[in-house]
Amino acid sequence: MPSEIVEKTLLFEKYLKKIQPIKEDVNKLNNLFFEIKKYISLKYNINAELMGSVAKNTFLKDNNDLDIFIFFDLNTSEKQVEKKALLIGKNVFNHFNGTFIIDYASHPYTKGIIKNCKVEIVPCYKINSISQMKSAVDRTPFHTQFVLKNINESQRKQVLLLKQFLKTINCYGSDLKTKGFSGYLCELLIIKYKTFENTLKELCNLKKNSVISIFETKTNTEKIIEEFKSPLVFLDPVDKKRNVAASLGYECLLKTKHYAIKFLSNPEEIYFDKKTFEKKSVTIRTLKSFLKNHYFYFICFEKPDIIDDILYPQLERFKKSIEKYIVKNDFSLNYCFFDVCKISHLCIIGFDFKTNKLSCFNHRRGPDLFTKNEKVQEFLKKHKNIYFRDKYYVCVEKRKITSAFDLIKSIGKIKIQKQLAISRQIRKKLRKTFFALDISELQYAINKKKRLNLHMFFASISNLKVKQVRFRDKNIIP
Image (cartoon, rainbow, N blue to C red):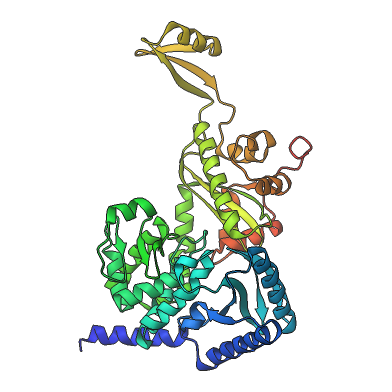
């Protein structure tokens, strides 16, 4: 066996020991599940089954989530399902001295902590085939059954390596923030390509409009691509009408391909160690060098009390409307992003401007030589300072805003907010908690800390004695 293969095998074995749950952890989770199952069965005469990665034994050491599904007959109304499921969920958490909240998916459900384990009590309908499905969660038991039937012990280890690799590069998770690979997609990729390495190779060689299927069947690729409109299509083996990779975004797919190529050419431990990977990716020296040639500004406001799957699309829409507002005011961006700091509970939208200042006057091109006279007269009525350039009228206008930071600060004004696409929940928080930051705050944080964690930075903003711009006067907040 070549030495490089031996080294790679040893590397995988070394990291599997770190990410694979030990027997005691597995037993603890299974015992807790059987206790909960017994309680639900005796008290409510309802069947409860374990789903998710714990049921399939494909969970990472730190992800000890119990997804417990409770099954209702098809003749039970949705209202009855919701009411009874919440009652059962609340009583389960109370009985086992846990803490919980109510969350929302296809149905409202309870989730929380019992004996230091994350637990979700999810209602679904008891169905015999996908054709009877009433909501997306009804499909989950079929996913669990398929994986259990088609995966072996060796492949389970390969799934763990794939999940940890994706987790390290921030591409694991099908939530609307990450737009990455779901656990089920990881499992199917390993079932399809057998090993972690093979999967990376296939992802590196993905062609445009790729359609992947576990079973080699004839498919109308063009029709499927048109129907799903996703960067990658992986047909669900239990429901051919569904794309398992529907939530996967272009950025995550590109990032995965990039790091897969690097890993395959030089397999290193760093790709399985998130903390080390992040430290190596961003150093103070590279950040300082980067910031010298960029004009960064941020707007921040308190996170509205809504679930992430509602919040993130709203933030995306808000961000895009700000980008249009910036372009309308003659500025250009290199990049724009948003994030939610879980520590400080702040929503953050960052802007990397191409330029910091504009001239006081804007030269805007108007009608040309062949424009109808009526249109020309309308233009001349609106604009007094004009001159001629080639075949065009050009008007000279004084800009209202010439500073990029002033433009960002203006988003705190109600009259500007009315021009933007802002949800009711975000608008409410903007009016009460909006503030803007310029690059000096970021540089201050970099100089003060050996390593910069943006989330920690925003969490400690209130303690930093630096210039902040807050909008709290009577003209802006009613």
